[in-house]
Length: 294
Image (cartoon, rainbow, N blue to C red; front, side, top):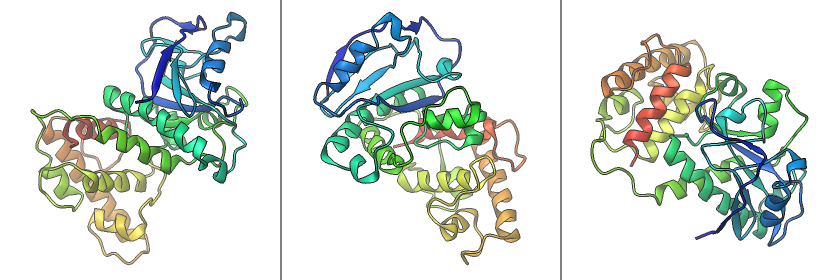
């Protein structure tokens, strides 16, 4: 268990003006050390600083600075919609520095915070694209990502070398350690058939992987292929030749329609079955995943 303490900052807005959709990741721009979380949390308690965060985290502890129900002054203009973690270290760190023993312990502690939020607010394990940020779609964001979309500050944290894939895997493992609901899960067989995976009514890692690959391949998801083009072609039920062309786009459209119908049948309304993966379909998918995931 990570050592946990509380130093509530006066630099916050009591209550929230919007729903929670983002988990924001930041660097403190402070040196790594065993008391960095406590030192920075104490600094953020000074009224003159005019900044705060929900959690400050280092390699051996986390310090609560703002409660979830209040807005931290961290990442405009999405403070009303975000929960934020400040990490000991710098945005300028390279890959090797993010993977040293200190940072790996730091990220593991931060994953505890993020996993709690993912469970509580149904946040998916996804580093959001610009389109998803602009649409206020649930997911993880860096301060730099929000600034690139909304241009509200000059922050670049957590930096170009931040290990998003590794961190989200850590969060996923923490979520897996939390007991899931044991009753009342909707039947997900129709969804599994839509994404061409084993229809066993067990929403686990492979069903997750199929859903992620499908969403990522759409314009809304950034037309990405995180598991390779051939895997995504398998998900959409077309020839797995590694070349994404008109046939794959048609299969993608048909698969999104099938997924939208499956989600509606499960009780998660995507507001139609038009073959377009947008905010409504994404919200329905994330709600279904949260309800069904093992």
